[in-house]
Length: 194
Image (cartoon, rainbow, N blue to C red; front, side, top):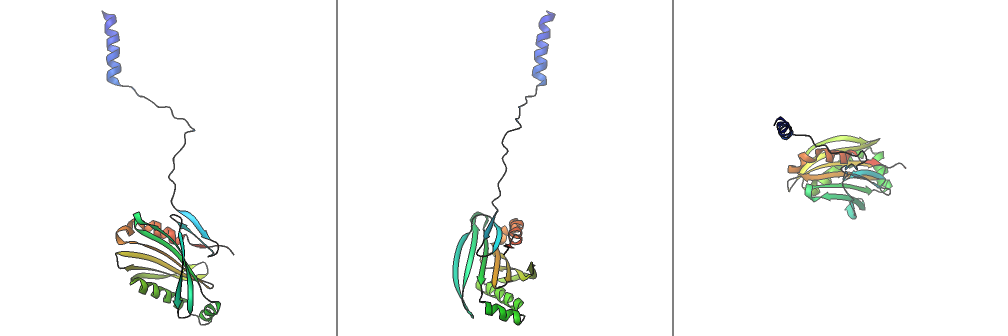
């Protein structure tokens, strides 16, 4: 009778105490890593590179100015699910116009005129602005709101005869979630070596 108690005791002990099941792990299993949507984009003709969250749509527009018509080259990625649009634009001005600006020390005034035009076209309200640089080139960063609950971070640089504009536009509701992305986008803008 004692012999029958031991196997039952052993079975009760095993059932009540539980046991660990381990799964063997192979060292060569593939690791899944999240891929970033941010990719380096460069435009050799525009002489710049920047991180963008997708492949930009490329377009051109002709704009009439006091000094004649100029062609605006636009590179845009719009992420509708995040309610954000990232844009790089550049304009090549005639060299005689740029020489006039330099000779009369009017580079900052020209950039301010670009800022004023951007604000007027957007029916925007300026929030803040500061002087910045891109290497040895002068620029301005300004933040503004516009109708439709939109907020925009905008940078303008004059590099030789080319005016670059970098902007990120989102809604004020989404802006707080996109601060790092927008700042990273703006900070990633670089000139390509000549």
